[in-house]
Length: 98
Image (tube, rainbow, N blue to C red; front, side):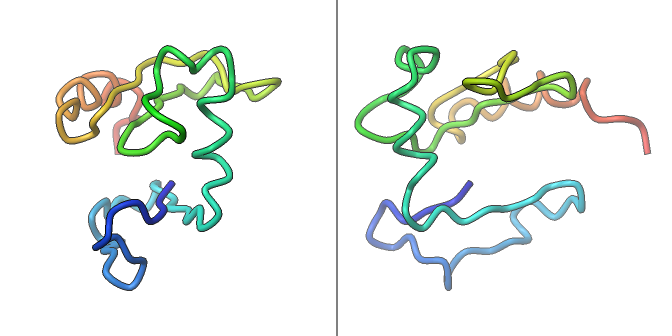
């Protein structure tokens, strides 16, 4: 999920090839609907920082379902750049062999 936060964040400057895998789907949350919703959920309050969720990841496996909130959460981190190794470690086992 992508949206503008910093002054130089702009969709026209965004590179969709940043994650070129065809299984990746990019969404643009112009109104920050999801970014604002996440910190309001009890399940996410201890995982978010500030009034909206940004520069974080929430990783769910193939068995995840969304009832009230998506679950089960496998891993989360903030900032994405700082937690990229953890994300990679938990994501790779979920990716089937090609």
